[in-house]
Amino acid sequence: MTTHLALLRGINVSGHSMIKMEALKTTLEGIGFQNVQTYIQSGNVFVDTEEQNAAAVGFKIKQEIFKAFGHEVPVVVIGSADLEACFKNNPFLKEKDIDIKKLYVAFISTALQSTSINDLKISQFKPDEASIDDSRIFIKYAVGAGKTRFDQKYIEKKLNVIATIRNWNTVTQLLKMYEEKSKDIKKS
Image 1 (cartoon, helix red, strand yellow):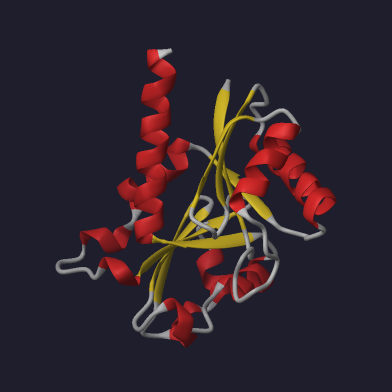
Image 2 (cartoon, one colour):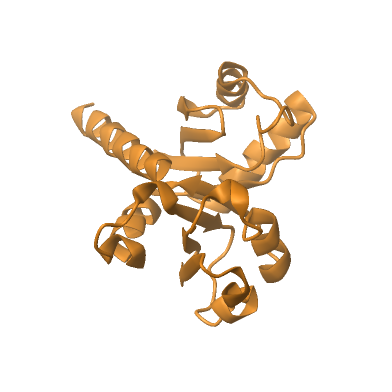
């Protein structure tokens, strides 16, 4: 059994693509996922399945959301190693007196080349900063996520990928939840 974390993009934001987490949980259990657990309304869903392939899990979830709720929702599926890498590889965490509230991670549907940072033309968004690490983009917003044009839509357009962004507090909580799920599996 493998635990996957599905990050749904663009649900329950400003009244668009509304999906109640309890209804999503029931729907995903109905198609065979086990131990379905959601975290906050923005679409973070843990599922256990025999399927090892993250892309196949994401596709199945995306299809079922469209069938059950009528919303076309992009899904990026990650594992605990992806979240652990966020803590190990985020260059902004090394800065003295870093304001955690300004840190975000864009999870990308595919691995990026280190040269992809050039395609983003991040210098035009100064003082916002970004750094690429495999299928993640670490972001440090100068003012905040709501006051920048360097957002998921821009990233998707420039890199031709699916992206979904989570703030650092959410990333931290999701890793804790993964660790708890891992402990529960070892106990059983």
